[in-house]
Length: 319
Image (cartoon, rainbow, N blue to C red; front, top):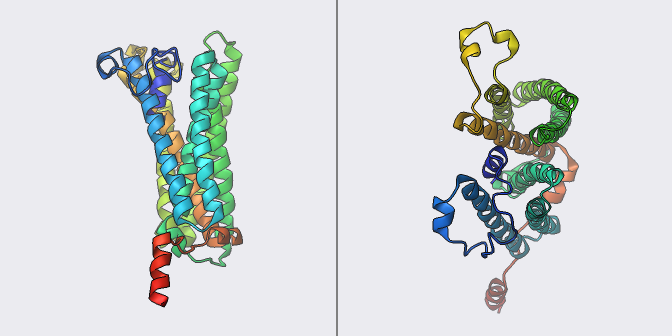
């Protein structure tokens, strides 16, 4: 969903379908598939983005039903309701972006998407078997990992906000606005890299054998290094190589191609990986909290809610 949404922004296809919730007057699900599949590419990705949005909404409804039927933990039930509210709100933001043709709404829509994705990853974490079987530890290192994880997650979110400002910056905006947003984007990237290095080092130093923490920590570091490379690639494919590299033939001969495949997929991969980094950072933070924080007791395992048929059978067995 985030990848397709990234392509929509990269190709400027946000207004390829001018109405909402319909598609050119058709019901979303009844729009002729031949026109969608064989039509213009911008129409294909925009209408596909909407269809995938409804799929995510259906999954959110299924998750909500499952929590209210199978979970006794009230907090999980309400988190399921929050997931459904979140996907409905995100869909409404997408619709308002089309109806109002407003860039500011597009920025908010682009920020809420990764946040909702990270939230669903958090839901998957706290409902997993490994979460339920985990036991609290009194190790002091876990507290440090938890604090580093919280700061890292906040930095990733800030970076996403700055990235959304850069990505949706109007071509008519003053050059100073672009330079300011780019400066803070790079500065936060440096701070984030330092925090991820410290977080991974702390996890590997004290919990190398705990794969539940070590794997996401190493994965987070690898993803961030790849993300920096994708960021550099996005700059080159959009604006060309820096001036200080112009003395080399490969840099002097390179000409960025607007809406080219390399440009589009590199930029979109940069956006999508940013969302994955946010989700991974939040997941690692929650896992460290599960092992160290007494608040995690609120999400301690509980027996599934007994269905009416099971209660009848148990009563029969008692008789």
